[in-house]
Image 1: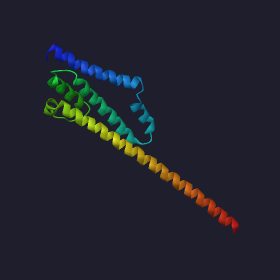
Image 2: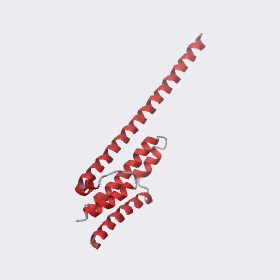
Image 3: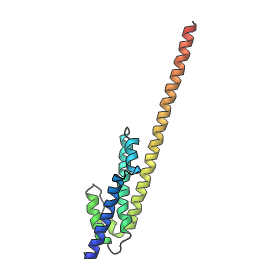
Length: 151
């Protein structure tokens, strides 16, 4: 690897780390709102975390598109990085299709967003059902009390 390639590679990872740190320092809404919104729904919380992690990985690919002639070096570095998080990717897939891998990760991020939105809607519907049940029960109990007092 040449010095220029190494500097380019290190720049990609530096820019990505800067984004990660900035997101936490500035209390990015995408991260922190879900921590409160889903504090009672562990599955939606996990999906939100996975969604953010996917967008963080995507950011590396996005930044790498700005640099030329580092496909092989970037692929090897990303493979090591992803393997640290348990992601299994074959070496050739990243080298041959960095843009393809980026689009797949982007689609995964969008799919996670859709699943989270579905879960949010389901939670709202569930809460509406509970509200309707409690309301109907209270109204029914009132009517029963009125009828029993009339006797």
